[in-house]
Amino acid sequence: MIFSTDTEHVKVLGRTYYRDNIRWCAFSASGVEFAAKTDSLSVEIFGDDRAGDPENAPRIGIFVNGERVVDRMIENRREKLVIYEGSERAMIVRIIKLTESAMSTFGIGEIDAGNGDIIPTFKKNFMIEFVGDSITCGYGVDDEDENHTFHTYSEDCTKAFAYRTAEALGVDYSLVSFSGYGVISGYTGDGVINSKELLPPHYEKVGFSYATSGTPGDTFKVEDIRWNFERQPDMVFVNLGTNDASYCGEDPDKQKLYIERYVELLKKIRKNNPKAYLMCGLGIMGDVLYKSMCEAAAAYTAQTGDTNIDTVYFEAIRPDSEGYVADYHPRAVTHARCSAVLVDKLKEVAAKKLGRVLGQRVLALSFDDGPNTVTTPQVLEKLKKYGVVATFFLVGDNINEASSAVVRECIAAGNDIENHSIHHYVMSDMKIEDVLKELEEDSDRIEAITGRRPEFFRPPYIAVSDAMRAHVPYTMIAGYGAEDWEDSVSATERAKRILAAFKNGIIILLHDEKGNYRTVEALDTIIPVAKALGYEFVTIPELFKRMDVTPVGGVVYNEAEQAVLY
Image 1 (cartoon, one colour):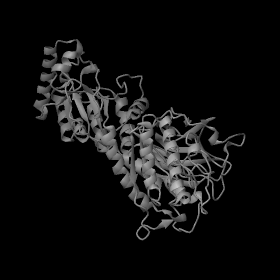
Image 2: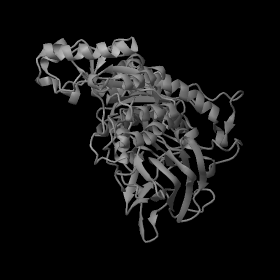
Image 3: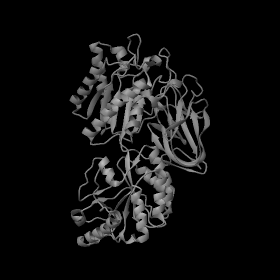
Image 4: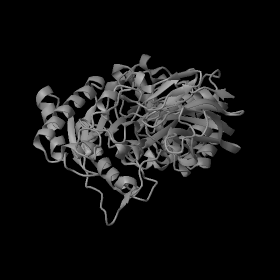
């Protein structure tokens, strides 16, 4: 099957521009990501008017389950690249631009999945925008000779600190960065201000490039396209000042101008991202303007009253132990060290200022309406196949001698057993004493098999009354589902809906009622895709422990990060 790169089929990474069924990418790390289940996969790639230029053509990377399978310079205006051929498998595919906006752009056309299917991966529940210069772009990281200069073939943003930080934290990202650019001056080797290479004028654009994008009969300039800011970042990290320092040096008047223009940039960022927490960092290639950057952050708060801003210091390149790459830029080892510093800082800020947990990827898979001797064993086989565990919410009326053996298999495999009532009634219409009787009888039957009394209860149909909120002695659980009780919902659609909801701390709600084979089939996509994205499957009790959330009564939980009232 042939798929376009619209948002129905792919997740967009960074800033891109969709035009005539081609998704154009300018900034570093921009591109697409999707989940595929197929035995063959290829993609159509479009180059701009710099395709084939040995020094400035775009370099792209294609990753399958985190492994780079394609790394190439774009040589032609249009070409087809094979991503995978082999036995049918589920995979996460990421196609991104490794090089920066200024030199060239590329487009992603149709995706050929053979007889298979593709669906977009989920939007993560946290996003960071990185605004920076050549350090953010990964300038020269693949050229070990410090005396060499710029070429796109030696630039790789995935080895730079910003991309590394996003991956380590498990967050979505966007990079807005240009080599040599600054706030008041681009890089200058003679002390004369370089006002041509400034980042702020391009901040609100899809990019800026000396190349002309588009196909030969339909060209455009990315700097003519305004970015829509529809996806709002939770945090914006700015790393600008290295190039400005080549002009400012220790001159207090020039540093004052840098501070003023930096404040203006922060205001522009805030205007477009009203809820984002702002972070400013400097030091990897020198800290001449670090103090001025901190003064700019303080001046911004003084002028606006906005206290949602913080700073971080990076120790400069260690010449003896780390060394340099092209143009005395940081090697991958320096990027890794600085990323570790930033990861720790952003975790701290997210926890203290935003109440968010970053850097952890856990979720709980759960099944309702068992046990039975048909579908429940099929689900257990899938869990065993992929080495994961789940939580099963049992209906007491389905517990008999044969299904009790299946429950014991669940427990032996490390799964969790919880309460889903005896009869699966709409309990919000029942007297509270009848509700409690239902729950206690179900727990008695479960305890007789497992030796453990349930702690959690999923209300049938998630129907909850005020009396239940006040008196039910179990933590009540809902979750994110896929309407998988409906035969009309295909296995692919079930997987697509679940993957669209993925985030740290999520509880997935599926059903193992007898004959629900489509959900069993969907697990062959859901589980490997989640694992490829670094998620760990845990039981619901373990999920609350990992997320450091103490459940409270009177609420129904969709996830272990927040309580959702019905």
